Amino acid sequence: MAEGLRPAQARAVKAPGSVAVVAGAGTGKTHMLAHRYLKHVRDGLDPLEIVAVTFTERAAAELRSRIRALLNAELPAGARARLTVESAQISTMHALAQRICKEFPEQAGVAPDFTILDDLEGGIWLTERIESALGDLPSALFDAVPYQSVRAALRALLADPITTDDAFARPPDGWGDMVNEAAAAARAELTQSPSWQAAADTVRSVMGADGDRRETTRREAIGALELLERGDFGAGLAQLAALSLVGGSKRAFPEGGFSVLGEAIKALREATRGALATGLVDLALGEADDGLAALLPLLQGAYMAIRARLEAEKNARRVLDFSDLEVHALRALTDAAVVDHYRARWRTLMVDEFQDTNAVQEKILDVLAATMTVTVVGDEKQSIYGFRGASSHVFDRYRARVVADGGDVVVLSETFRSHAGLTADLNATFAHVLGDAHQ
Image (cartoon, rainbow, N blue to C red; front, side, top):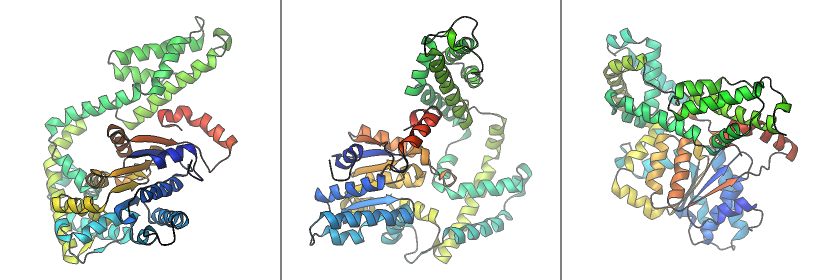
């Protein structure tokens, strides 16, 4: 085992190809990433051929510091990597996007001397421009939708233009199929998970005496599961979500069966309630969707008009905000010569906090990673940037992609931030709440 590495960390570090690392809080992922970086260098790569990305400047600085210290400690004094690491791409996603835009401004569609609006300045600037542009929109839009709702909707659409353009390209006559597919996928994810299957097996096998309240609940749960199997998801999920564990006697069950059954029923109930809270398992088109379909041409026209106006003003001022950096970097990466340039320069991609990746960032990484060895580190439970369009499902997709390409998945489940007693209590509390996501 490499010095200072736990077995799971060492397995992630030594993975010969791509690897997806599921790393909960306090499990030593930065330590692992630094050693993984060292492994790539020892395998013959120069730091200038390695891209390491995380999602805050503080995290990027910490990762660079750890990598620098490790290279200095492990490599000879004259090793080239100890010098070139200072110029290596160890940065935030926005810094990576900025580099692409700066190196290929024409292909990115930006001014070569652009400057960047920070979050505060960019937010104020955008609010002012949207308020001004709203006054020029057709009155028919505001006859159908309140002013405040139009403003909020346009702001959300402008924040993620790639996803917005994709959404507008999908006509209303195809929404039904999309909704049905999303609902079916959510139901499959719920009912085919190992934790659900284990709980369902327990409910079917642990029987109590007739007339006992918990036995009655068990039979209600079995009835709900049968409804799901027949395709009646609405009734089945509603019945599972309403299950009660009040009452019942331990004497009515085989030894230990009362508690085991209770835990299984609770697991099914809480998983069902969590799934219903997402709105996907029972997703269906309604009257609101009919109204949106009728309103769509007006909303799309308003979005296109304001977007064009904002882009014209930004071009005139030669400024970009952080979202623009990503959009224009992706635009540059549609040019084959640009893609060839980076694929020739960079051989390995390492991405931390992958659960905070949004749709545009995912597309950028997709292009860059196509011919690279990839290390992605994430934990869906720590996804906190949903308000910026980030989705933990991106990490799920990449994890599946790594496996499909012959790579490995490693779970870091030992915490260095707590003691055994507290960890045991937390595990007991959250095992059923988090289901298959629990570590």
